[in-house]
Length: 367
Image (cartoon, rainbow, N blue to C red; front, side):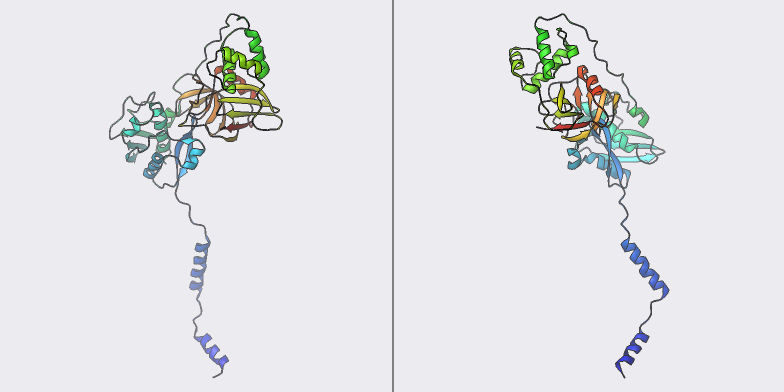
């Protein structure tokens, strides 16, 4: 038998693919080529500065979502200034959801661990996360099986919490004390004029009278020069005033307005056309909640901004990095003390608010 005939016999004996085999092969190819289905994810809520921020977690059930919240932010998220106020190693005892009510049971560490000043914030994180579950409109908190009473300042936990109740302001906006003019002080006008020429004081405030504006300018000068910070014009401050030069920006920039936040010196440089217009004393994030360095932009202006997690008003707020903002605050110590924001005194907050615009560059410099 010739070779050609043998090949013909083999071909005749080889089964031909039927239609259903071709369809199966085609379906298999489509399945292999298609992208894998996305893993289920849920939102958990942490904090950035004075505001809540949502991050995604690979969690397919409410229980897994709560556990992800209790685990805290990742290292990469912490570099962005994202924080949790829920104490580490807080136990998760269980979760039930029925008729729109989620009952969450956590360990005693949730109520007694960590900084007592963060009680409202940690409860807000948990409630905001749980109230994001589908169909859930109320949350009842349990601590080791019992209802906590009188633990969270300003929040009643004896009954279920709603999101509307949680987000509503519970206090009136803070008002700075009225400015009362003092008596003229001999020689003070010359010192004020010197502070004006150096960029630490506004010319309109140089009236020869001692008061908050002069003290603020002296604080800024002492911070910039590395002196003892007390707001008092003592011998060392007087001596340094005579030899000081006007501050310059630490970084180069083009025309227009911008701001530099100098974390080491705890001041803000307000800059216009690459010239320092005013040096402002501030208090940035404390070591446990530091203000992240980097390049940002003012993205909004709020005369009154409500801090949901800490239930307090932030006046003349200029957010530039999520929940991190310039804002007025009653307590502005000379050292880092905030939750990540840049606190200002009432003597400068409105001025910087008017100076700034949405889109203004902000550079936070560590050293």
